Length: 213
Image (cartoon, rainbow, N blue to C red; front, side):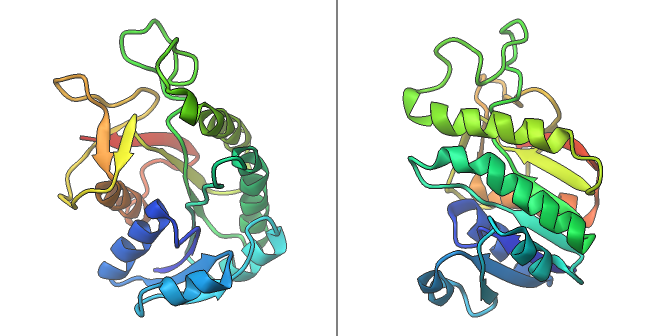
């Protein structure tokens, strides 16, 4: 597949790019700052563009089989995420290209908390991540109303951290996936596996889904 990844230099985006290349896909890694291109592996074709410009998204999405958005604004700029997502969707529509989006866990229900979500559950989130959680909730509201683009929205579990690639995970839809100890977690490496599995074998067209151990 010909895949364009926005946010390819980030923690999650870089792992998605690595996973895609390992599977033999032709990956275009789009980054926002010139110095990030030199940091990309030689196996990636680095391009400079801003996802806030839907014309740039369309340019690098045209003729591709798939766009993956792994954009995550830095701390203090979380509020930009919804507008960036709109731009990616607009660009994907112009390019007529399918898009997979790295989302947040904010909109997922927490098991056993009477319908509360990760964002609404009292004292569930540390204050340090509330802003990005709110932005992700707004991001999902934008995405689920999108009817023109072929999209899928992959939510991480409660804990998404660097780790190892096992190739194993379990899928869910509207609720956090938890293990027998009540933990909801996955490595960034296996999160990337879940993303590429969806890319190659779509099961969640215009749907939200989540992956965890």
